[in-house]
Length: 236
Length: 225
Image (cartoon, rainbow over all chains, first blue to last red; front, side, top):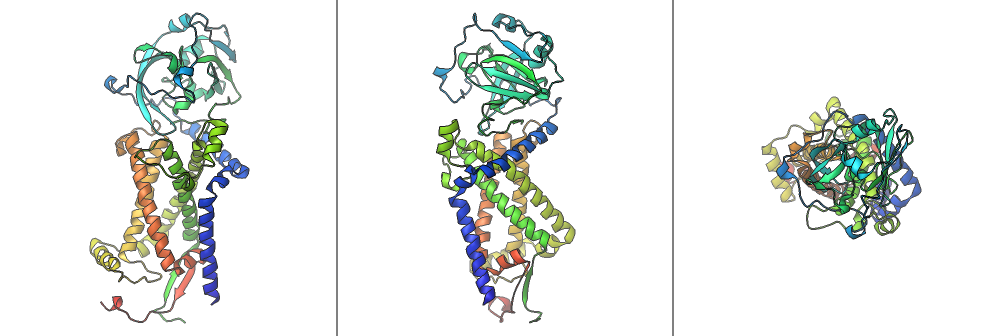
């Protein structure tokens, strides 16, 4: 009978453990100790992703016909609250490990060499959308202003309160661009005028809009959604 | 006691350890996966938050405009290492030790249909320590599904770095769909698996302590066929 009792205890234990997991799933996740373990995994995942990232491998590109004209709007605020930056007043400021930190006007930015790409935007939520962006490789711009490209990170501050940062390898990737145009038009206000950083090798939230400051640093920049629990590297 | 007809179920330590690691990580992956699914449902339904993993969605939304997806992803990206690691060890051990060959083979369509029909009429005897053809097919099936889960998961996690892997599933959204369907298959397996364990609780004893036995059965309808 002892075996039977043990068995019952085991079964009971197993069942209540299962029930506990189900019923207190919320509490388990919100526990600080659990959060710390998950955060360690996330930092480990940052290292794995940085190692997996191939600076030469291009994201797939698609035929023009597949590019969506009416691109999905996505932000934590509605499009009517998107900041309207006056092209006459706007200045892009530069900071950190950059030799020439003079601010840039929209006109100067538009005079930079342009390229176009038809790539896929992948949102962390799971949806994806192909779009056509026009702009200047960030690598070209960083070289133009004398940025220290041996530094570890490039950070961005934005007019809507957003902030992001990426690893230098991704910043120098040939498809990482300062996108001044979407669907062959000047980037509309709600999509981030005067420009967004378009990175087809990162999840959508690593593509900041309304950029007002670019800085180069060896200290890992914070990220708006990273501060809210998302993985920092978020490469795809 | 040592009647050669006694049914004995043995589980070696590597099988038990990897079994429970896989069990735990699969629960974590399904729970967090359902929360992630809810953020952008493929079909016209979402999972009740109670059955998902990712913390208090309302509180997270109030605090940081995020419906607990960040936390669910953190679980998912942690659980994937535990699942992939334990699954790999389980498969390597199963191949190297002969566990797969000994216990999951031979199996064929003929024996499967014979045992399936018997099971459907509740006439399939559960023999502790040996698997019938339906069980064998189920175990191969779930091993295949976890493999599909891992490969489609990699295609979703790294669609650019592993391109063109996603084309195996008909593209990125296809990979999401396959990832979901494989989850449904695994969830179905878990349901049947747990019900059968509840019917023959000694299998649980064996999976925890390594051994369980029951005395030889008197001849019955099934064994007399």
